[in-house]
Image 1: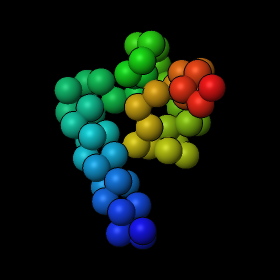
Image 2: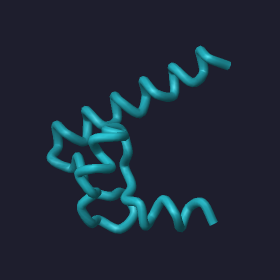
Image 3: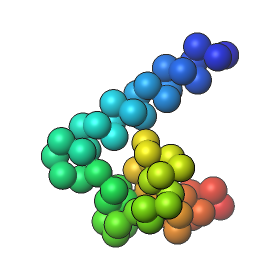
Image 4: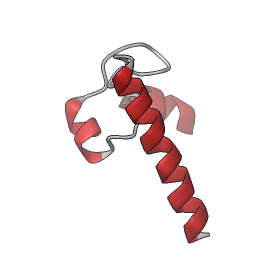
Length: 58
């Protein structure tokens, strides 16, 4: 279980680094708007804004 969590986190980090390289880091994958800086500070691997995350949770 822990190994799976670590692997998922590693994949998320690699994805964030790839987005950084292509200039898409900090841009929501769903709506295309900028992700709030505070959210990125807490979860630098996130790819969606709070609004889109809440839509996904419903």
